Image (cartoon, rainbow, N blue to C red):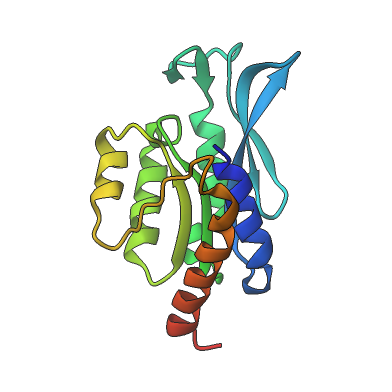
Length: 167
């Protein structure tokens, strides 16, 4: 529906606040989705999952690279980032295979940082817990609303940052 496009646009608009975090994008080969790659806002890349990856961690036909994902998360150190804005694309089934990831997200949500994230539609376990938090606002991206969402979310995030940011 355009979740990643929307969150990329928000990261671009919030560049003056030096957001930290990552995006997830599909890996396509001859038009077929074969995996998922993470790209940090500082330019690092990692293949999170691929159909031909051998791994004991699997989601559907994809082998998930948990160790590499956790190394990237450790390097990014998002809970201790000096940035007041954290971008997470996405809180999904593959990412939640990592206990380190779920602990980092919980820590971020408990902090004073503004977290902008995409989250899986199906809500099992940790995903459900995030969606049930009273301090999280969920917005469903649809074909009908996606065009105007960047403006409204950007305004809302700016208000939040300015109310909690001493800069």
